[in-house]
Length: 271
Image 1 (cartoon, one colour):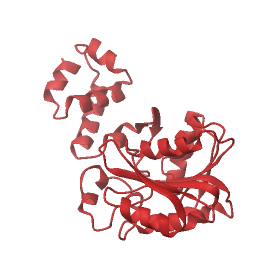
Image 2 (cartoon, helix red, strand yellow; image 1 turned 135 degrees about the vertical axis):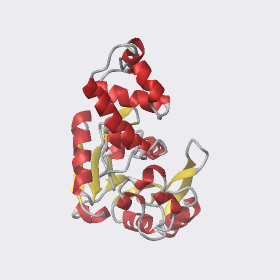
Image 3 (cartoon, one colour; image 1 turned 90 degrees about the horizontal axis):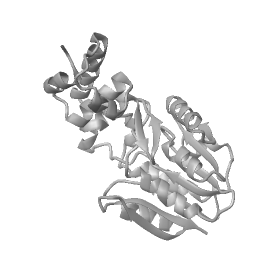
């Protein structure tokens, strides 16, 4: 008789990943797995688990297999059309929200929204804000719109490359972005989860700074006086990003470290 207990002995997955897959297959909470680990399993459930197990053992990200990832305490749907939201990107949201404190009806722009995690999280945490989000990918925008609808967030999604999607819209209080910043020659693109994620969301196809240059240089024409720009970047790019901001006229330029102590978000105020 196949039970969760006997199946766990045969699985090559780490225990937590195995539990995540069983919760997904059976649509039950973790507590149910513990209380029913000796119950017989239906053959259809076993077949489905084995299919998902094989995908995970082949290296496919767990988020794509189960179809969601938690971010800022919200559950976001994800697909191979979008980058998987990561904990370090929560720093970008938190930094933006800190800047918005005390502002009435601020206007916020999220460039390259992907799953919508950043834009939707800001809209939910700052309900008085008007949030606009852009992305070049129609498939990504479909995921983002679904997330906004399911989570009850008001976000205006526009398709197009960076500022080109805005059709003249400007006067934003805050611009945020987590653009592709991995250099095209970086070997990490061929490792781990990155192998399965959309390459255009990971690398600019160049030195890792070209998208950041476009965003920083174009921000001046879109921000109100005293508006802020914050961008996420690579572990070794903070100095380059600070220089780009300063050379474009931004003041109070500073970087913020992630939980690992690595400068991950850099921004400034445009006067």
